[in-house]
Image (cartoon, rainbow, N blue to C red; front, side, top):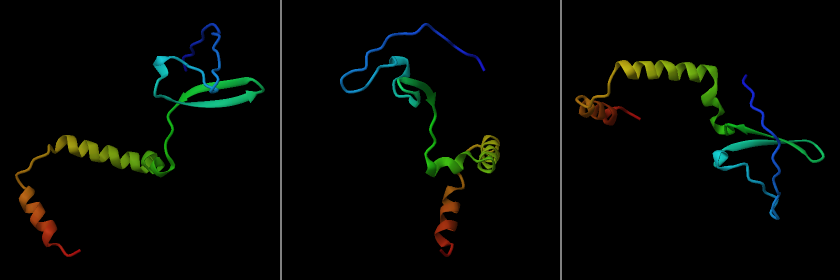
Length: 93
C-alpha cells in the first residue's frame, strides 16, 4: 500500500470546534480516532449504511456480476414491451 507523508501543518481549531482539511476533501467522509489525549488519526473512508450492507455481500456481488454480464449481451429493446405489460397485467397477484 503506497504511503504519502508530508510535513506537519499547523491548523487552528475554530470556536465551533472545527478544522479544515482542505477543499480536496470537501464532501468526503472521514473516520476520526482519538488515539490519546490531543492525538487524533483522521482517515478518509467509505461508510456503508447498515440497511445497504447486504448489497456488498459476496453472494449479492456475484449475482450482480452475472446480471450485468447478461445485460451487456442482451441490449435493451422495447419491441416486446406491450406483450410483457399484458402478461404482467393478466397474471394473478
